[in-house]
Length: 241
Image 1 (cartoon, rainbow, N blue to C red):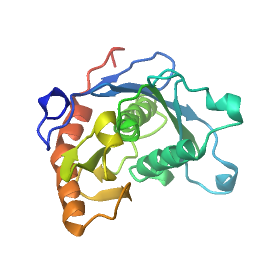
Image 2: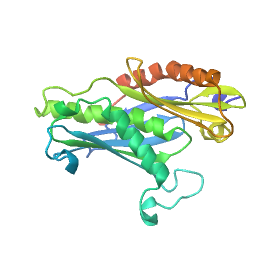
Image 3: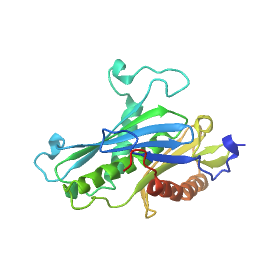
């Protein structure tokens, strides 16, 4: 029996609250069950050094987990000399996923930084960050349109992400921490709203997995993705956007 009595192909409750903070051009509190991630999108009128001679913009992301996002307090990574390998891998995944959705040439010579801070972790923090981060990014780009800086929001498509796992030989959609900790296989799927895959991450935690298991997890991801895209479109605004 899954937590909350969920079926194997059932997502946790998903909520995306737009305009959650006042200062950033775009902000979203993304909740996948008991996982809560604050995503803020900040527009900067500069680009990384490697793009200075070019004409395109850039999307960057940073990810962090607050010290008490987990049952035991973890020291801030800033006190340990900087982000660890897991953090760097996650923030690169978020940035790649969001860049895929953006026409960087149409963005112009500016950068949007999407910060994803985990307030509470119960599995699926990176998928919540991508799903909420896209909405924060979209709102930031729409604000540039409202201000007359851009003619249109330079977006190719929406992106969202969801995980699936094999637990006790059963494929499960959107596992929480207790399920993920027992998983023999864990996969993360980033999808476009037209059904195409943006990125897939898969790891065998205990033993190699089969094609059948991989296809089962991919099928679950495609089952859950439409719910995420609906949540992105219907996301309520706390700040009156």
